[in-house]
Length: 367
Image 1 (cartoon, rainbow, N blue to C red):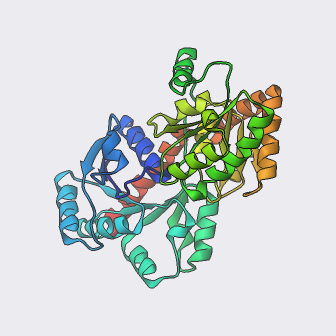
Image 2: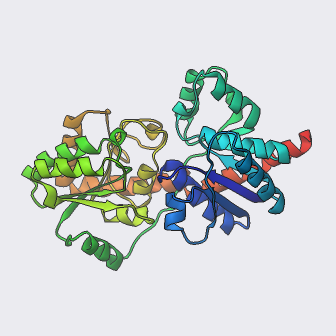
Image 3: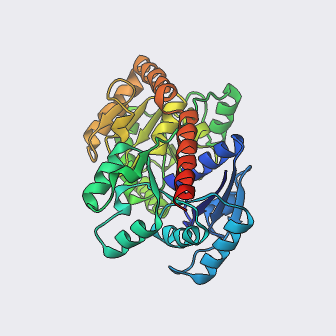
């Protein structure tokens, strides 16, 4: 298959990560995947190895220049299907796909991609053939928000990762990069630095943790508009020397492998890639019970789940794991087993490949 992904966002998010991983995986399976991405976005700036990138801004909705470009690109490269995410991509990619007689598959990250607005409904019904959601809860909540949606149009394909181990030298080198030694205890989170991710409250909780466990460090891997504010809070709490802002990484699983405890304190999610990555490297996880997390994470079995916004429980669960090395080991092992049984990259790619082939078959039959 020849596949075109369209990613118009500048920042790196969950769907960007999904496109990156699945594009590489599908290429390994013998397919050809192009990613049309914003010229100033993270895809182009980081230029991940092994990807065929097409720098192109989307401009305004219904941009005839972009639609013409897409139609020519689809025909020239014999593209079999287009994959889009946000509405701007659905419009341009969907129109080009309709002109060329190929399917437009929408990868939905969260239920708030939908509403009862006529424009949203019109674009989706006219221009989208199938939807991929990362968990069942996203589909259920989307259908509550927009009752015009057809549930049979949705397929759940969980974000997948293959379990991975890193060498002692790789772990040591990453710690050294952060200015930390083997004796330092790392509480880590991989996240966009935005308000909804709960990093500010995590810093306040860490302030209390640090008072009791002074050998602890908080590592925040990611980038975003909240960075300056978060750094200011760390200075005001006088814990700047124990909080490391690791920035963007092309290898989030390696970063997660260095954490002693991995945290997801997000207030709103679809199905967080970060928790899957934590599981895949066998880390003990504390996560808010948001989105579809509970479809993978089972409290006290393979992770510790807390209610969203409950800083008391966040503190208690982190403190519990700091003090109980046996629990950390048990949760980490169970997390890796969870990945192997139902959330591997192999399973994700097989399901994705099957959906793509079925969508192409249906379009060819209808044409």
